[in-house]
Amino acid sequence: MHYQPTYESVSRHPLPAWFDNAKFGIFIHWGLYSVPGWAPLAGELSETLATGDWAKWFANNPYAEWYMNSMRIEGSPTQRYHQQTYGADFRYFDFVEEFNAAAQQWNPDAWAELFQRVHARYAVLTTKHHDGFLLWPSQTPNPYLANYHARRNLVSEFVNAIRRRGLKAGLYYSGGLDWTFNDTVIQHIADIPKAVPQTSDYVNYANAHWYELIDRYETMILWNDIAYPAAANLNELFAYYYNKLPEGVVNNRFTQRFQLGADGNIAADNFYDFETPEYSSFSEIRAKKWETCRGIGASFGYNRNEGPEHHISVENLIRLLVDIVSKNGNLLLNVGPMADGTIPELQRERLLGLGEWLDVNGEAIFDTKPWIVADGSTDDGVAVRFTCKETNLFATLLDTPKSHVFEIKGLRCTDGTVIQLLGSSAPLEWHATDAGIVVTLREKLPAAPAHALRITPIPTYRA
Ligand code: GLC
Image 1 (cartoon, helix red, strand yellow):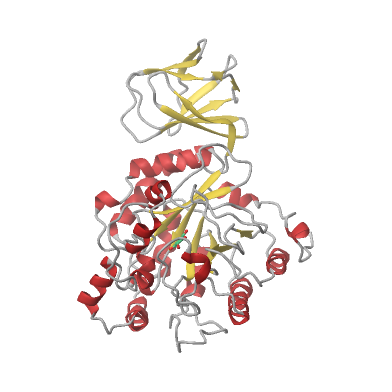
Image 2 (image 1 turned 135 degrees about the vertical axis):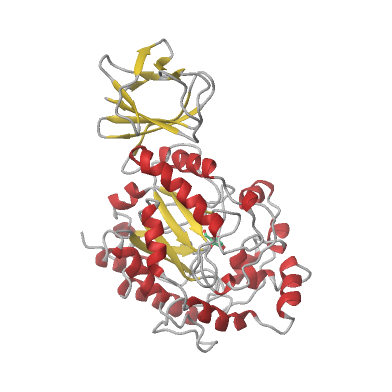
């Protein structure tokens, strides 16, 4: 298919199967903010989405990658920390030297190996966050700050290492905020549209970067953030991209008039391949593909203040992924490396825990589709999530049933149906009841965050 630079034409872009099937990707927020690696412990975005208290959010921003904004808010904890640690004269841009020195230590292959080991199928790197620092020496350098980019070409080394391990490489770019072009301090959600640079210089700058990320690095995702300047021609950009990389995908954050939904999703008026709720998920099956992004803790950038209690547990991470996939979503789980590229142990441990569960249960996740319904339950109240693939239904119990006999409601299975626990080939004993099916095991399941059953052929559903 050849795309024309019109909405009508680019909106014919079909969702590529690789992205639909991938289910699990790794987001990486790495940049100057990784040097201080500091933010107050103020809870997760989901809480602010519920309360709407944005003034409190920005003054106590738990996103460490917002350090440059937070340190400019009078009296904020980040401002105090910065003055105490570095002194009032130390500018944010002075972190460049230390970042570049530390990044010499980075081993891109260690990242790629870890991501592959935990079964992620794609990875997305921040090439420019809101502070404007470029992770690659661009042909279009920052016009205000000399050498305001990584000395090593982190973008090129990243995509190469990721691809060598068979994962797809995607790139994030903050099109809507660049504090070197517009340094409006953001203290409320209503300040964001005022902070989006709208000059023609910026349009050319951001466009040049996206074209460069497509041409030189063949990014498989245009993961734009916040918004995009109103004068840009997005249909032209997307048509160019899809003609060059038809398997590429575009997220929904290229909106040219910023709006944040109460569900944490950014409302877009242009075409996109998928939606991007942040620290939140949709609670029903959606026809349109979506991808939840979140940190392992409450921040995307590395935050040295976060202890184990601020990181999502392996149990909840597994349940989160299962739930998202049952509703047609992917999980883009973020790691925030330290300035030298080291992935902190607490984050690594969570990834490995999820990876181990996927070693056994990945079949219920990867390459699946949502079923007729996503949510179910057992007779003793254990939540169940469904996915399907070919002739199989996967019913994943999000906890361990109390008894070795449990009923899954809503399933009508034909005689001869085979039910197995992933990780074991023995068929399980089962019989039909009025409400569904009863599975009888020899003994109680061992405690685990989630247990996946394969049911063949796919049952019919009854409410
Ligand atoms: C946001 C934030 C940000 C983070 C992100 C990832 O809206 O501003 O710091 O990069 O999106 O989804």
